[in-house]
Amino acid sequence: MSDKIKLMVLDDSLLFREVMIQGFQNDDRIEIVGFASDPFDATEKIPLLEPDVLTCDIEMPRMDGIKFIRCLMSQYPLPVIVVSSLAVGVFESMDAGALDFINKPENLNDDTTKFFEDLRGKIIAASQAKFAFRRRENIGIHIEPAGVRGAVNSKNIIAIGASTGGTDAINSVLTKFSPNMPGIVVVQHMPAGFTKLYAQRLDEISNLSVKEAEDGDEVMPGRALIAAGDFHMRVEKSASGCVVRIEKAPKVNGHRPSVDVLFESVAETCGREAIGVILTGMGADGAEGLKKIRDFGGYTIGQDERSSVVYGMPMAAYLLGAVMVQLPLYRVPDEIIRKLNTGL
Image (cartoon, rainbow, N blue to C red; front, side, top):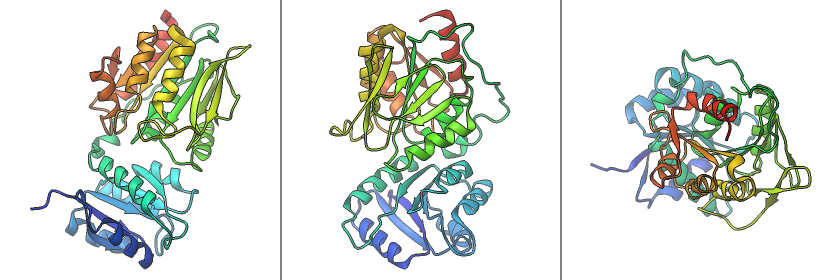
């Protein structure tokens, strides 16, 4: 009996299905167990094939991917990775229940090595996700947006890092804050072209001012800066406080942006004025940086195993001794505010 990850592909393009066969035909971890050309075809095949992970396009005949994912989650919860050339609709698919997403190559006849390298990592991460729990974790918990009491200390900074499952986790944290919060800097592992849309979405649904970071942007109260896809983000001192620097340096821990790059700069620049938060994600990016924040006198928080979609990054940080307090996701915003109110 094979212990490979069972992958099913939902896409109306015959060419893409053939490319997927070629991409995974000799893989030692992943086996394609079936294909579907539209959501109705998939609905019949999924219970029979019992895939571990599903890849799904957004634009398809008879029913779009967003509607299908929403129906799937209510009847047969399954880790879904959206594979689409459409940037529009990606975050709606995440709201519907998709776990992750990746850009479909513009030309399927070109070299797709990088695409399969990235997709393979996402499939492995998705296969490890505690998916059914992901949608239940915050049911019945309603917290009004809150901020610090009195004037915000402009020297304080909150740095957040996440990967797989992180778009939802970051939403859960930022939407619990009022504008009366110190400046926030965020790295979410995400490809270029999507971070601007993600920041715009957060700006719409939260009480903060949220934007994709640009070089020289000031870190200021009430604002959250999201690292741009394919660029590292660092924090450095300025005449008025702190600004971010954006650079296309080599990848760190296989990522650009890297959580470690951000956290290490925050530790060195802000020291004991910093709060570092590591959320759900696969791998160990952010562990060393979070340890540095703690070593430099800052306060550090890690998401606990039970509420993490993938307990990789938080676990690595915890085992390294970087995490001062480990909490379920819904308690993270309260803990940040509590610490700010009692003093760093």
